[in-house]
Image (cartoon, rainbow, N blue to C red; front, side, top):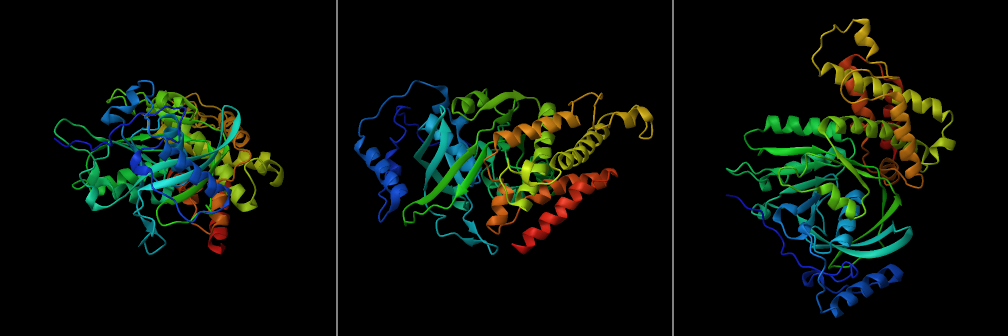
Length: 436
């Protein structure tokens, strides 16, 4: 039977987050600036602390089922890792790095580094903090095939998610007991990514192990800034939590393993809401998609923060309503067609059930009012954040527009629904992206 390889758990006092495991105590040389000074001090403190402190006993730190691999070491992936490591310093997690850099997929110079040192600027207990955190890292390679993945959290860009997942499928669990790898899609455009993933698995069913795919989302605003530190021993990152949102996890994740991931993540300060069913998660992901269809393209086009779009974009309220009305209509029609249909599509009663201003059909209660409220709340919670799409435009990187606005437009075309506002934004962002 296949077994997961898990790092040995070591316990430290939660009050001493800088007391790191010995194998991560490697010197950093030739560092300058205040950020470098903080990093050097952190490592010095860790080296001098030779007495292991015992943390309160918790089931989260001992079981192999809790081993977590985060695929995607961008802003969101590092944010999750930092919060978990702060709460549970010996939590068995790794940031998986593909070591691919640029359009030619050349091996990145830092791909072999086993630790990411993160300067983490965040808010905790109402106070602004800057902390230096060590995140264990693994480069994906065929040499790791014996190191099985039990729980994979995907935080990559939507357009690279399926390729990234496929690159680690040789490490998926598959044994006679039915034990499977759990994949949690926590990236933007999770609905589009799920469809692509299922299609890819169907096309390669003979080589793709059976997995449990779960959907979730986060509304936390996180910015990845360029680190000024360079050295040959560590990869340095600087991330800023620019907006406190929340995380929504599905009740299905951890159910077979008897793990309450929501409690674990919430204790780590990730602001998890109560876990929901798959049906309810589908509704919430459409709400999240609606917010993305408003915030991401508009902030990218007008180059402003999330909160500024309300004043910078002329006629914002009307435009927001028009965008979200199209999203709701696509979502309700798609939902209705997936259910048993006692009525015909041209039945007035059936057509009334797809009215975006209300929803009387069974299942998730999507409505334009609900989506407007959700979108407004996200804008308020992350008002100081620069959306991921704006960051991509500013850094001349590929955007996720095809998995957000593009997904709504494509589904609308499949269902015979016109989406002119979203189609116009899709074209404008594609043009802006091509120019950057």
